[in-house]
Amino acid sequence: MFTKHRFQIKNSSKLKYSESKLLFPEFISNCFNKQQLVKLKVQFTYGSNAVIYLLEKEPMIFQGADKENFFPSVYFLWSFPTIFPILFIQHSTFGFLKKGADLMIPGIELINQFPKFEENCPVGISTICKNKEGNGYTICGPLAVGKVLFSSDELKEKIETGQKGKGVEILHIFGDFLWESGSRRSFPQFMSDCVYAALNPQASQNDETDNLYMSLWNFMGKSILKEDDQLINLSAENISSKLMNEAEELLKIEETSLSSEEMDNLLFNIFFSAIKYQLTPASKFPFDAGQFYANYIIKIYRLGKNWKLKEQEEINNNENGWVVKVKTIKSINFIENINFDHPYVQNALPFDEDFSNSDLKHLPSQTSINIYEQMFSLTEQVMPIFRSRGHRRGDLVNIQEIRSILLEYAKEKNLILNDGKDITLDDDTLQMVVKYFLPETFPVKILIQKLCEAMTKAVLVKTVGGRELIYRGKVPNIEFKIEKRSGNKIVTLVNNLAAFGIEAKDIAKEIKGTGTSIFPNVLGCEGPQLLIQGNEVNEVTRLLVDMGITKKFIKGIDLGVKEKKKK
Image (cartoon, rainbow, N blue to C red; front, side):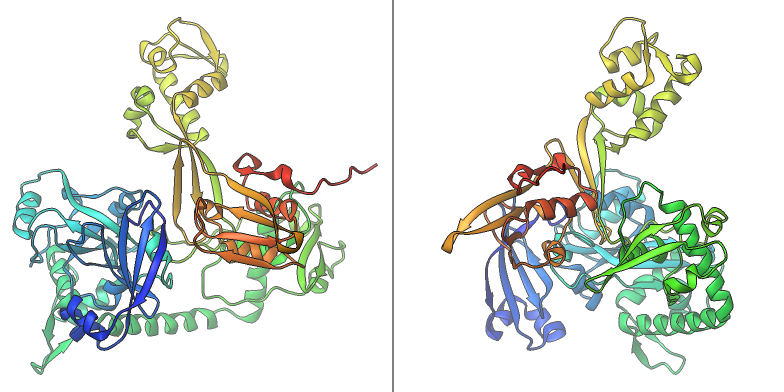
């Protein structure tokens, strides 16, 4: 529901306490108390409607067009993890859910004290995975909400007998458009050694996985007995605060373990390693210093180390001359030039630090710009080559992957000629794929082009928040319009920025010396529309190109003011 389609707010209204109590009798007493709820009626881009209920500007409950059930958001489940049943999946399974898939029966973990629910009941979904060290488990979430298609007894039986098929229809997931409409906070994580020790102090580290799952289920909603037989409740807040305190203590120990001189040396190495291996002499200058710090410094070392860059004069104060030139424009620092021939840069070594290999990016990406990549969606025509490599129809691949798989296939069939530059079509399968039925020889790049023509073009947008947007076939364009308003004033309208994961407010901040306005609901515009006083097509185009968007995705560039040619 919210994973693939944006929605626009049609109207909103505040609910009276009596209305809230009538709608959510079980939630009012246990969750919301007498806090006022706001009801939003929204419409998706494909025309369907839904209702969202906000609590303090946070989406908590939603209801589809069928109005059969009320479903919780992930924000609701993080605050009240005991209200709805929770299913557990392996960490790797969540990647399929992020791509828009529903949860299949084999992906659901069978735990002791399996939760009880009826068919079409709302359920939350949490992930579990082993720690990097292999001596414990990490529980994340809940990260998704769906409608279970079977009762608990039926689903348990299907899992036990190894049956296949769809188990849960996914309606809402961490990182989707409903999550974006809230505070965008990250999901809670729980370390199993802390949770397990709190729930069962007598358990050994060698207990079976089923015992761990039993402890997790207890943690998510049941009371436990302390040694003095007094009932207590473990809440997510208690465990989270405990883990945060432990993390802060570890961070203090880690930071104090390095002397000031060692920190300076480490930052020195990171700084020049980033220059040598991330930038090139062909890079566009001037380069925003803040962008350089966010893109090439912060994401190299782990979060939590708070170091400050040395002053420009201190870095340039050496016997081999200047390294970095910085200029300030309107209180913003720009890297004007870099001496790539300086020994500091030439002698820099690749910086490698022990990063977590987690697939879940629960923290926002540290890059300050989105990433746009040309992709191709696999069709049935090319599957004879790609299926044996573990791909399925509809998977996205880039040019490098297409080239690699083509060469692997040609090598297996002894079709490679001229040291890998050419491939002969002396293979029935390859002839069927490229639709050329003569055993002739083609350059590799020509065959790659034929494979690409047989696939569906797509664009993959990786946003700053870690969310992925996929557009297959026709890709929406960012569109410029020039209009005249009252008083013959010219304004620039920018549509469809949200289609590429760009916040209109971020563009507005970069436009200097003129007024801007943002309109959230405009017909024919995906996401908010940006209005700029005057003709600013050229300036916005430059900003979009700097963000990595090619001009073929921008419509209306010709509406900009014609710049005079330099003589």
